[in-house]
Length: 609
Image (cartoon, rainbow, N blue to C red; front, side):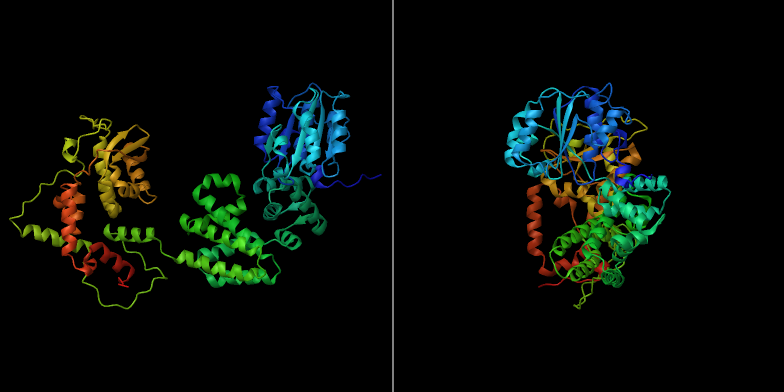
């Protein structure tokens, strides 16, 4: 006589703690509580469907009532463990909260808790979907739940913890079971297929795992259905046909079209999926998930391998190199907003097509960081970037003649040579700073500011020399940030952090050198000189702007600044600035070298509206 067929979800249900997948935080806590004899009288398991609430409850019951228990490493084949697994143990009562939700059933339970267990150590009451109990039933259970007999344990499970009275939750130890990662589900499906003699394509396993949305039971049921549909060989196309999912290749292709700004191809993909009867809301959800995978790989490639399957990693690796993190975050935020609108819209295709077009426009937009990087590239001698495709040159009168940076410098040097009356300032060494730091301050030195060592070692430069070298490096690669860096002085180097100090009035300069553009450049320079260092800026009263190093002074002179006037005192600088503004004509902005460089790079003009 043949035995009845048993579905995968029941056949491969976890039998011990080591079989529970994706819930390590729950397993570890319960195992430690058993080993340390710190058992609570009531437990509450909360989580989405198919994440292992009932299985965990049964395994906990086995650990408590096994021979020689409570213990973690019990034998799941013991008679009492088999009885608990099959739901026929007299000491472990499983109650369906949906059908036994009245106050009369709870009163009957309350009357029975006083009876001792028959064979095990504890009498365990497991109530599934406990949120279905009525308020009267909950109130009838309160006193017994708070102070049950020593031989009684309560285990509750629910998918909606918000519907449970707070007075019940406060009397339980709560465990939140999370959605199981796609990679873990995919690996478990492959393991089941191998044991059942089924040829399951890894891409198909990933498609099933993604469709299960974190539920192991759902994934196993889907695999059962696929075996019935196509036999012993399952491909991704079978999964897509049976469940109506969108293939990984299609989602990856759509993401690639958007990143490459190929609007026509992206819209063609949307059209094909719509005509094939695919759910467009699910398509957008899968697209957001794909961009999220690209972001994870971009931020932490090594960590991504722990979360993403090999099939997904091979597809997102190249895309992560073709888009900036900031733009990727904008895309995810944009599509997430559209996803909320699409759920209630009758014309989902229109929303998705408009969202795709808008996404390409987002990638084409030029950010302020792009402008600053372009100007830095020109000032440092790097080749100018190509003009963005979305910037159009307006028709306007011819601006003032423009000079390249090297011509401006040459002009300044020529004027110095042809003016013997002007005293020539003696240029100190690039990496040196004044021996007496008081010379660079307009106020007394704060008590907590540490002065540089007078006799640095030969192998490690002093903090001041190091910071001076950093400023010189910044002036070459990020010229616009050099003046901001020059407004700080060395404060402390503890071997892990290199700290500089600035006046609280220099918050703008502090923001510049701690930005995502400049801080990595500084840390890389510090690491090359001192070893691994993090860079930090502190704001302290009493610190004045130091005299700029020679290379910064030359740069400021080249763009028309006069350090002797601007760096004297704040009062003199303000008066001088006010006089200069009164003398400047309204259209003098055309003669600013930095503005002229920006206009030249982006082939633009200044409009006076």
